[in-house]
Length: 334
Length: 93
Image (cartoon, rainbow over all chains, first blue to last red; front, top):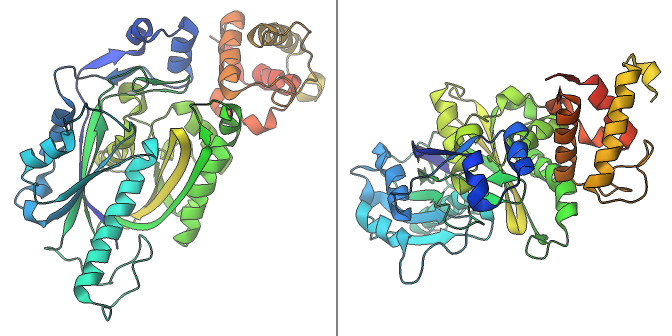
């Protein structure tokens, strides 16, 4: 069963206030007030002296579980919101693989689901590792077919088995990468997460995803509809993931949200009848929406705050909006 | 729902309605008057973003803080519904 083996997060210590972004981004006074008062966004991380690959490496540097285990890493996935982030032939992902001693790994970027890409990367990593194991064991191997994130032979965790490294995090390098409509402000930061196919900790129980191509922000045609359907659509995948895991919201210890803004999650909680204080919103005021790294950053915060005990089930949820909208949710067992 | 049925301060609710209809007409660039019975989304086409901007302007004008975290958008069908919520879920700033 796909499992998160270790998570490391880097959020730059340098912060910039929302007010100081107003001039460069052309935000009105009303927009700034709206961000601060209702969206709960006060400041975001900016690390002008650190490159994109440097940002990812800072996250990977905290991943102690990777030291000495580089040979086990078979895949490196970079979950990304922005489709293009560097001019050809610069490839930050390959730079990172080289610096980490992971040149042997198959490295690729996961895009096109915007900020829901982090969850997609976990799903892909788990599937690839499970399929490799199934292929190595042959068709007579124990366990179900590799038809989902929960696929793979049951049994004790393989301490020496193959791993995937999932990276997330981006630079706020253009206006589009700094602010999204009147909804959110992006913050720089990065995460690194080791995933195994059959690990024992933070096991993935279910994944639900709904890709809505009609919500393409480039045309703006369906923006009003997206606003109306945003919360019900996110709720639908959260409840579907729970259903697939054989659980209900009552079984969930905490929700790890995407950091779009606070008011969205206040309203999600009203819709779901889930207590707001069990949604890990701690990182929104000081870090903003850290692209695909939100869920990993919020996982780390939940662990630091002691919110997760062994056996607790938790729900990760994200929406990627831009070139279409993706609603995604994952259920894990800590 | 009439203000007198809810125990709300009727005068304060009238102030909320007055400010709200004026702000809505300006935000939506609407020449015709906005009235209490108008439906926010279907009739006025109020988006979530404009809705928040409306609440922010009301907070400024009426010098109040609105408990937005308690606001169930699905229950706010008309201008009057929203005014009743604001009048009942706000405090002086």
